[in-house]
Image: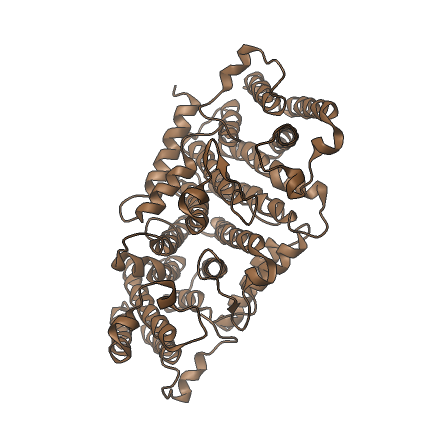
Length: 298
Length: 298
């Protein structure tokens, strides 16, 4: 059986090749590759695979397409987040941010290309199972679009009055929910109980990201950008406890299924990575390193 | 029978309501509406309807979805084109450009919301006819995405060496091709012969737009932005002759079908509008006014 990271990278490479083949403007082609490679942690697609595998993964082509779409959309969101209109980040994963390397115009077009490419990737699998493809597409649009997805989450930062609950849910949890829902749909199962798992993991990720932001000096800090940050309000200890509580909730929410124990093991490994991201100074047992993928970044 | 403009506006309103319902950040909600209403000429969706009706329009829900998706994508492209990273246009359709009214961040997010919403609109109709929905989605991604769609067309402007043939084809013709192809697919017909019709109309539109740009002082001109402009190179008379030749080619390319004559009449009305846009000083017979929709702009 092909290892998940290899399956994912192959599927992502297929999609990117299709988006950038002959006739694509060469600078755009290079910039699309820059946005997607080398791999970051690929949390969302790996979560999608883990759910599908816990449920039998009987349509692997659909799972590949769903995971690829989630990753292309995530990469698009990172390119946009770094733009001057948002965080104006000079760097990402130890290299110049894409807009610094290729210019703002190309960065905006790369995000477009990745978003459109994500939907194309899923639509191509319609013949495999039209109903699942429909549900997959709608699970993904719900996670990334408006009124409640990642785009809405980002938009809350431009509002005069921020709805904190909606903000956190839309900004981060929605795409984790989509990832677990997409894995369940690809494998032919009801996505709703899996949304709860994704939602808790998304909240855990948000807390970890807030903690990392508070601890770091190099990043564009939330405080400087006037953004809500849970760690800033709760303090490090209570935030770390909240992170653990979210993980426990995620573990409890995993539905009964053939691969429940294996999936819970995957959640524990994710949790260890989140903790290390949040609290880099804390000791982390070496066994938990197994989950590590190439590259850093979120 | 409902008139096409009414059908279209109702379908667009349904989609926009879905994208901006309860829980959507209010500023984003207002900005999405600002991008889509009041109606511009709506050329691309009307072309899609005209093709579908020439072929019997046996799945009107699909035609509505296809036309709506095309228009949402077109509106997204206008919002992006006006951004400082591209044309930095202060106005659009006699009002401040969206980024001037709502800020760059919101403008970028509006474009995202519209692109994602376009694919959601089409995916929702999967149950009506999965195969047509798949083909529709892929016809649309081909027209707007990379390597050969509108995103690639825009990207050519950032390249050191521009491939003029690819540039014009991708920047404008691709979305007109998608519009005719989508109409044929929605009605259950082979899209390929209709692509040729769309391609000639797209070229005609590009020539008209270049002529209008040359004639106008108020717009962000191609010359100032260093962009290729056919009218600038050919001169007004030869450009006008080229416009007419493209329309003649489009008319000849219309496949034999029950509604051929009616569709050709629609093309003649479009042609008159393109000519008036290109050569505002020339006399245009009043009968050709019938096609006029509310609002100006492209």
